[in-house]
Length: 99
Image (cartoon, rainbow, N blue to C red; front, side):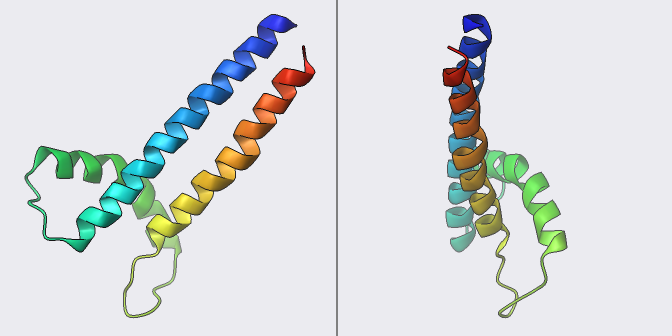
């Protein structure tokens, strides 16, 4: 069972790292939206291309509040925090209980 335990611990670690990285991509995208960044800059294009599919889905399901302020990054960040505290921690707990 220690092999399954190590696999779950590794999966939890990788998932935690990926969620943390995507969280910073969302934050960078929000900060970039506050300034007039060059849309042809490769960094801006990467941020847009990596975050827009998820933000677009969330944006479609949210009603428009407060004069068109986009709350989709906040919803995505809340979902990332939930996944970090619930899913990653649950995987770690299961892995440690298998040892």
